[in-house]
Structures are given as structure tokens and as C-alpha cells.
Amino acid sequence: MTSSAFNPVPSDGVTRAVTVSVTSQTPTDATLLAYPVTTANDVGTDVGTGPEGLERLGFTGRAGQHIILPQQSGPDVVLVGLGDDVSVAALRDAAAVAARAVPTDTGVALSIAGFSDFDHAELAAAMVEGAVLGRYTYEELRSEAKAIALQQVTLVVDDAAVTAAQAGAARGLILARAAAMSRDLANAPGGSLTAPIFGELARSIAESAGLEATIHDKAALESMGCGALLGVNAGSTTEPRMVVLKYTPDNPTAHLGLVGKGIMYDSGGISLKPSDGMHAAMKMDMSGAGSILSVMSVLRELEVPVAVTAYLACTDNMPSGSATKLGDVLVSRSGRTIEVMNTDAEGRLVLADAIALATENNVDAIIDIATLTGAALMALGPLTAAVLGNDDDILTQVEMAAELTDERVWQLPLDERYRPWLDSDIADIKNIGGTSAGSIAAALFLSEWVEDTPWAHLDIAGPMRSETVEAWRTKGATGFGTRLLAEFAANFVTPEN
Ligand code: BES
Ligand code: ZN
Ligand code: ZN
Image (tube, rainbow, N blue to C red; front, side, top):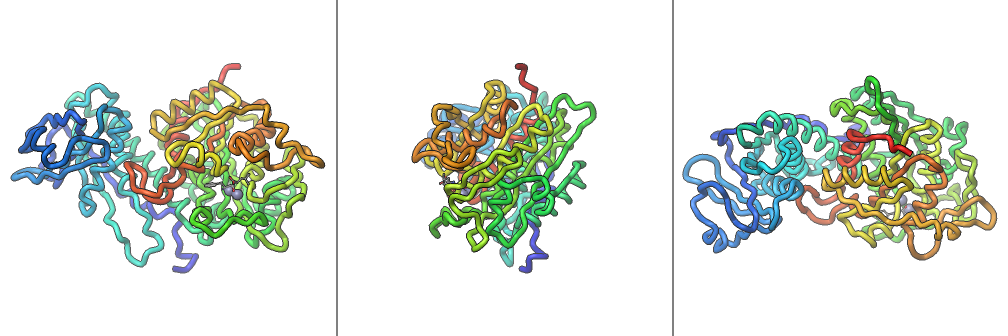
């Protein structure tokens, strides 16, 4: 595989080939029809056996469980467990389990008939997301694909729900496509997806997605005074990029700034990381930037009513004779000086310059997304992102988008009492705090550049990656935050202060 043949977004072709259809009839041409079932084991249709029979076969309706029941005529049935309660999130998970139950089938049919308590647009979107993301695999660097791609998702719904479900299913497919693209970008090796290649990709995506693109190269960053990003790049033989993308709808109701950490590979720099599995995962240290690029690619299709400008700070973080040394002082875009006390705390450096550009543009709010601290992974694990911010209204909007997409967040306090930990003896600030509260210290660092702009910071160091196949999360990059940010942008309202 030569680098010129490398496709950074292979699943774009795969997800664009997926068709979704909505019907109120049992699809006779389907090979398999999935029914979500709670632990009450009430299937609601004749599948040849009742609750006791199912239990004897080991199926209790627990979340994550499934059982295939071959049928004499019509599609085979797969029952998928929801757990005790029905929720849109549980149904999304069930759709993923169903889509994987017969991994060689190119189509899957999912019944959501009877689930009348839910908004069918929302539910249909979730089902399509679950099925498409549940079947995601990264095949770009294999000689031959190992998995068979999903091509068709059929939703069986009640008569009255057909129209709403059709619209929702189409929307779900767009969101799933963005999330799959985000996984591709994070799964791509650091040597294959460099900052300049990411910049070129952003330019071509911008063209097809109706965005304005400005890709600042190293010379531009020097004249712009982006000394923090340049300081992180100093050890690398590959140039950095600041990717700026702008989406403008007709008559925008507000202007949102999205800022992404794009560390294409984080070796730690002079503060070199140990050669372990976590280090190998650092090709995914651009997950934040990747998720924003993916979101930007679908804003027009989603008819998002607000203008969105993205700032993606891209470079790798390498040790070498030219690398930034501990104790060096960087002058950031805002003029604030930073003493670098650990070159592995590089994310906050590149974000500082990107945030400065967003505030100069007078956006109404900033959301940044970053694989920022191991401490966030330690505190919340691989399923939940940390969120911190300076504005309750924005934080509430983030929580609502997290709820809608089941990309869960948990708020940590932006506790100013820890701010003195970042005091430097010789510069305005240093880039590490104490030995505890690592995620809070990182956010306090960022808040200096944000100043008064309403802001929320998503630390996705935990959920960027999954070690197991579980519901809509497949092994490897999860694309976490992509659907969340898309929903956030779609529903964004400027906070009134
Ligand atoms: N990219 C890492 C954080 C990370 C760790 C992301 C694990 C995903 C999984 C970040 O640049 C980093 O190395 N942070 C340091 C900061 C410390 C030196 C203050 C960390 O968390 O150890
Ligand atoms: Zn680092
Ligand atoms: Zn990093």
C-alpha cells in the first residue's frame, strides 16, 4: 500500500451505498427480521415459542443478548435484548446487535412497530445509526476486506409512523456516515494521515460539502503568531496545519465555533511516552479534529440553521534535536506566554492558538473537543466524556445533545481554586498543574484563551476508543462526539447573558 493510494475515509463509499427503507408490512424479501424485546420477554408476535421457551434457550431479554429463531416461512427472526426498560438508547444498541447477529447478510430488517411511546423520527434515526455503526469495520489497510458491508436497512413501523420514520431514517444515515468517517480518520495510522494530508482532505471535503476552507501552512502560522502550535510541531519533520472551515446557511440564526485537537500522533515529544498499548493508540489523538471535520461534512445536508466555523489544530508531537525542550517558553497567538514543563501536555497548547482564532472571529459560543487527559479516562472510563465549561446554558445544551445521541458526558467543575497550580515562575502560565485534577487543570488552562466567550470543553480521552465490540461502539476508534456535536449544532441557541 503506497501512501498515495491511501484513502483516509474508506467508509464514505460504504455508508453512501447504504439504502434505508421504511415499511409498515412484514418485508417478505428480508432474510432476517429483528424484534427488540425487554426482560418481560414479550415478543408481541408469533415466533414459534413463548417467554418460557425463550428462557429455556437462554434468552432473557438482557441488554446485549440476542437469539436467532429460524422460521418455516418468511424471514428468520432475531430477538434482541433491551434490558428492563425501553429507551431510544437501548433500541439503538439493539439495532447494532441485530446488524451483527448475521454478519454475512448485506441487509437487516428491524421492527419498531408497537414502540409508540417514542418520537418515531428520533427512534428511526437511532435504529439506522445503531445498524450502520454496529457493522462498521476498518478495512483500508488489509489486502482483502474481512467483513461484509451492510447495504440495506429496513425499518418496520406502525402505519401512522411511516412518514416520521422515513425522515428520521434518512437523518440517521447522515449522522452515521459522519460518525463512520470520524472512526476512519482516527483509525488511520499516524504515518498515513499526517497534518498536510488531513488539510488536503479537509479542502476536498469542504468543496463537496459547500464549506469555505482556509488551510494555514507553517509559513502562515509563523506570520499569524501561532507559537503554541508551532512549538508542538518543532520536533517534527512534517509541517503543521491549522484547518479553518466555514459553513454558512441562508440567514444564520447564530455563529458557533468548533475547536478540535488534531495531534496526528502523540509520542509525548521530549517527555516521551512509554512504548505500550496506550502509546500505540496515540494515532487517535486527532479524534477531536476528525469528529469536527466529519460534522462539518454533513451540516448542509442536515440543514443546520446556524453558521459554524471550525478550527482544527493539526500536527504530530515528536521528539528530536529540534523539539521544544522542557522549560522553553512559547508565545501563543493571543500573546500569552507559556512555559512548557511537559511536552506531553501538547493538546492544550495547540488548542490555545485555535481558541484564540475562534474568539477573534467573535463566535457566539465555542465547543472544543479533545483527547486531552489520561485523567479523564481514569475518572470516567471508556464510556463517558468529561465536560467542563464557563456557561451553564451551553453545558445544558451539550448535555441535551449527549442524551439524544447516547454519547454520554459528565460534568467536572472548572474550579478556579486550582488555577494557581498553573502559575509559572517566568511566563504567564505553564502547561501542567499538580499531580491531581489533571482534567480540570487542562480545562483551566484552556479557559484563559476562551476568556468571556460561552464555552464548553469535551475531554474524550476515554470514549475515543473501545477495546471491545459493544452496542454501537466497535473495536478501535468510536467516532465519539461526532453525532453529539452535529445535534448540538443543529439545536444551538446563543445563550442569553
Ligand atoms: N493525548 C494525551 C491524553 C490521552 C491519554 C488521550 C490517554 C487518550 C488516552 C495527552 O496529550 C497527554 O499526554 N496528556 C498528559 C498530560 C500530562 C502530561 C499533564 C496525560 O494525561 O498524562
Ligand atoms: Zn500528550
Ligand atoms: Zn495528546
